[in-house]
Length: 328
Image 1 (cartoon, one colour):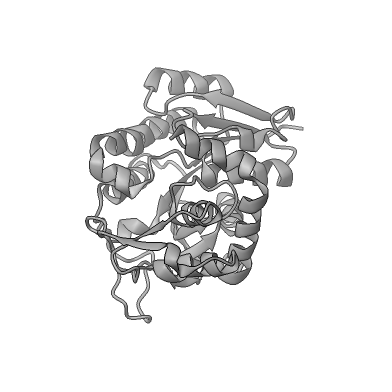
Image 2 (cartoon, one colour):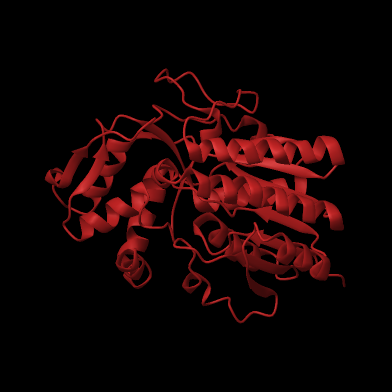
């Protein structure tokens, strides 16, 4: 029986890493290739339980290294590509925009060329709701797939540029693609510089938790395993050329998220420390996932259930996140 070969870029990161494990467990007949450069957010300890499986392969490579990527694609002739690899932290993009353009734009273009050359069956580009810019605080407004792209940070601008490249390869070359744009993810193996794991680790250590501005910026929170299920569905059932928004329908202010974690751990709100707001800090993100829901997907985690399980996971898995904090 022929085995489908699936390349997952960025599979040592947070969402990509969860997706690697999701696909390994759901599709044991697939040959899964995890390509990652292992930068500061890349970590393979999360895969220690699957590392010796016959259908799992790790490749250390830079997606901007054209010769290496082309050689890999020609050798393995992948059937599918799911592209997570990206620089993703907004604060870092403000201090070093060039790094984000190189990885997120040029790296995506190299992968597209390689995918086109071997004729992959599907190229999934995993993007973000941040490419749409910001919404007002009106709870009746949402991002849809038709919302114009108006990125406000170097990070979101680099992701919007890569989205447009992916679309162009479909329109110009007929490469079978889908673009998914997700809201803020949370869950196991989330790098500890992001809001939820940062807050959990700080509160567990009785350290101050920084909150930008007044903490009223709103995000829609999506559990990473709901996101994995959505990408799986789009990979196998998405209409070529289409964009699908993936949202959790769980809007919370940043301050609400921080307070929820503090209360869950039985600590005092005195740990909250308001700090100067981030440059270009978008007010609100909120996704309407109705288009994806027509394919049969719905989020299974409420925020209350998901955040409770996530807090519990971080309490039980200090072995994973403490070394990451110490090496930063």
